[in-house]
Image (cartoon, rainbow, N blue to C red):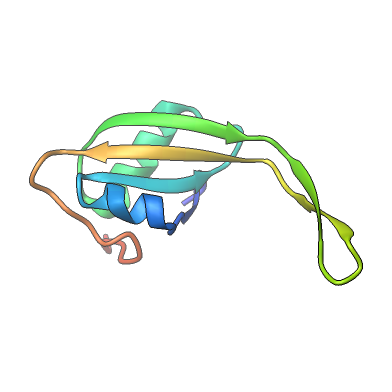
Length: 95
């Protein structure tokens, strides 16, 4: 897989899994149609809707000495699948 980097597992994304929406981190240069093709091939489920979001780089102070820590920018894709279908984000269908 060239476009999809990894699934995002958070509290909010886990709640969305129950209604058929799955969140993945994707490359910044990825378009919605390429994300759809890369998702449908290994998982074997049809994507009905794709929403993308780019998070901006953030700096905050943290650690013992108050060092500045940067969170890098990233692109996320929220993929909706057909009703009644589910998938395991960590198991990919073998060809």
